[in-house]
Image 1: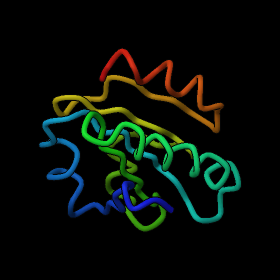
Image 2 (image 1 turned 135 degrees about the horizontal axis):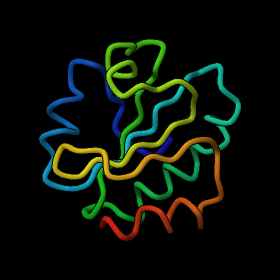
Image 3 (image 1 turned 90 degrees about the horizontal axis):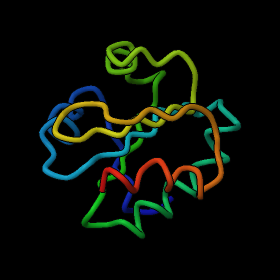
Length: 108
């Protein structure tokens, strides 16, 4: 996994995501989820490519249930893009990189 992807937990979510000056893509994931593992390399590649323009983080929904519940995460993978502390884009399920980039670029 790329070091550009931040491992988040409930305790650091507010500071790392809601107070961030740059947009933050949060990958809500779970270790038991095959589609989550399938999309992880794409998310890591985006973190590296857009470093400085986009912060990328992942949050294990099983270990961090408070944050998952706050954002009504019912299935994984769920990708939420935060800008100025607000969700501006929500993407569900594994998807091709092109589709993911198409959804993110207008917010960068």
